[in-house]
Amino acid sequence: MGGRSLQRAEVATENVITVIGCKGCDIREERPFSEGDYVFKEVGPCKKCAGTSYIRAIYAIPIKKD
Image 1: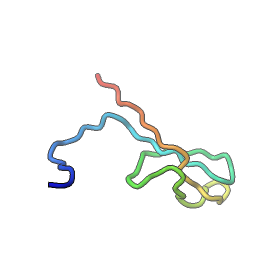
Image 2: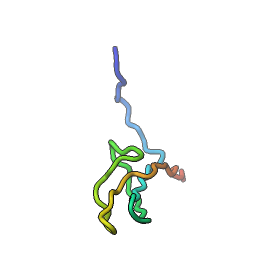
Image 3: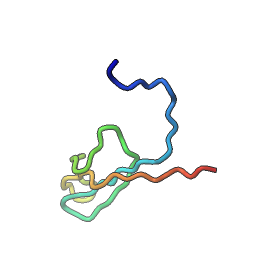
Image 4: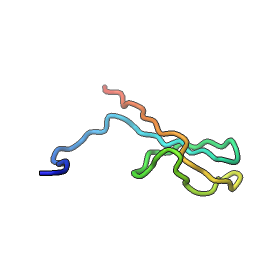
């Protein structure tokens, strides 16, 4: 049988963050990762200068266990 089965519940062990930058200015914005995000993906116009915004980086922050 091909494919991966998702029968068990997966618990999030990290927060994944997407960093947005602009090709025209120095603006930097962070938001939660969205499915389909990848580095260098263009995400629309810049809020500051109307240049092209793109995904500059993606990183994870481990969730601390109590």
